[in-house]
Length: 329
Image (tube, rainbow, N blue to C red; front, side, top):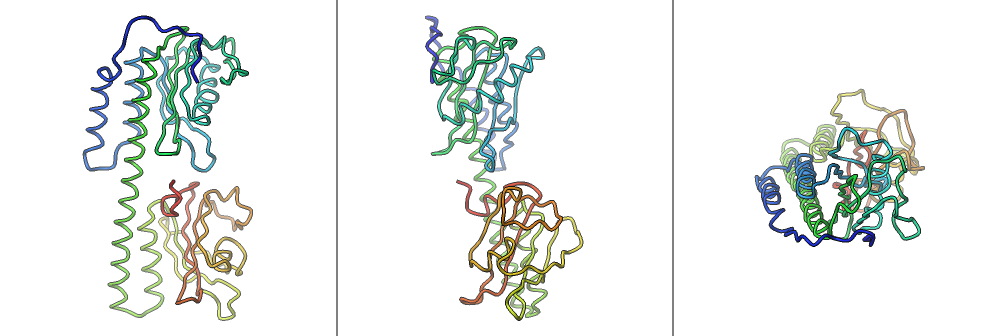
């Protein structure tokens, strides 16, 4: 939404020519064949916004995939920015841009009215007077927001919005490149893990050894996971018994049996489907056994049509297995 209170000055600005050196620099970083350094790329975007738009303050927020709320990943600000200004930009304007998925141009914060569809005005004690922001969009999803601010009224022109939009697009491309790199590396690890398991099966039929290879391969494949465990059904079929564990931190194994239908592993077996929990604190079905894990994924194990157990991976970070769960979009 564009605030009509700011009249653009007559001087023209060529956004394409102005932004070209910055976009070329970012593009070179994306073509090195390695995982992009996302944070340094976002810092370059912020520095470009500051230099091209003459703004003293710029900030980028990305959306947390679990809470769907923006969190600040990088900012550039003057030392005399007040707490009221920081709050206004970080907690009000950037979330508004991300939620509405549209640009925001406020020429005079003191004159913007919530009733007009703009965010609530900043505190009168604040230093900011004008704000310009754009959403970061990948396909049909908003992944964050980029905004600049100034103490001058009507500091930004329509041409500035074009420049900020181009910088926002470069930030989104960088985020996408980072995600694609992670997905490719995961696929390579999956292929290597399957090859390792296949080779091992030709050398041994020892069940414990095979199960240990599988959980280690799962941990190698899902780099964000801290632990992998295989449970097999008891002879009675009403409990899951832990049989193999791989733990990055070499912690003592948990010997708890899991009743079928209880907890995430028990539900995965009962319902015969993979269950992903991005945030255990928000999942009523999760049974806390005194661990600090925050996300987990459980899948049933089959021989033919018969369920024989489950394999689970977990992490102490929320939403750690999103790419592995197929929920990245």
